Length: 242
Ligand SMILES: C[S@@+](CC[C@H](N)C(=O)[O-])C[C@H]1O[C@@H](n2cnc3c(N)ncnc32)[C@H](O)[C@@H]1O
View 1: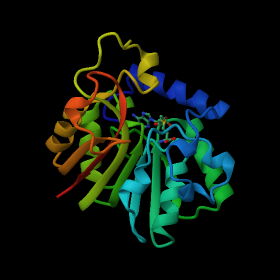
View 2 (view 1 turned 180 degrees about the horizontal axis):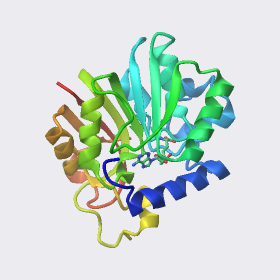
View 3 (view 1 turned 90 degrees about the vertical axis):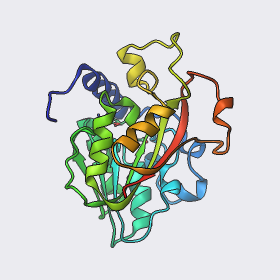
View 4 (view 1 turned 30 degrees about the horizontal axis):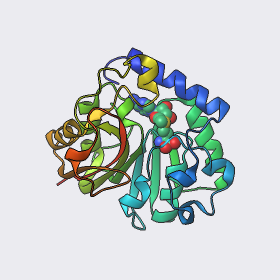
């Protein structure tokens, strides 16, 4: 990081260190992924997800591609991506929480996942070379960052020209309802840091991305105006580096 970690980073790290130690998942994988996708992943690995969508299917990964997962947690999306890119491809997971990295690395050994590595680092200062990645994925993490424009710039930096973004994240339609508490606990729980979907689109566009789309996860054709205002929901975010 160019600056020191903020109180938000510290609160988020503490929250997810505890989740890693207790293996407490937020939701069964079957609520997020097509069962066919996770069928050959051992239950103890597949059942630890803290995501809010399925960025893998949306990414349409190809054999040989290099994939970067932002906030890789226990590593489930990395392992799913690794199967799809195959031995000629590779997957890098980045996370700032040592307890999560330990869990992900242990899972990689269990799965014998030779084309996956986990690196300690921040979304705002990725430990990844510029123009080295084909696809950036992320599952319920960018909302946790206190500096989203910097995250968008970092994604742009590490992607190759023509590279793409496939992200599941929590957003709002319109400004967050003022009744939603904005404390560090609510931030770490993926609520208080959610961006308005219009700001998400603007932020990625300002970072240089084209074809930016932010859509409700479960109903991509839902008319945006019909969405409840200021209520956090799960969205699918896509875009491309020209
Ligand atoms: C909600 S969990 C999601 C984990 C994983 N993507 C999944 O789907 O299960 C958020 C993860 O992102 C990491 N994280 C949050 N903010 C981060 C940041 N600014 N830089 C690096 N990692 C971060 C946390 O340590 C945690 O492992």
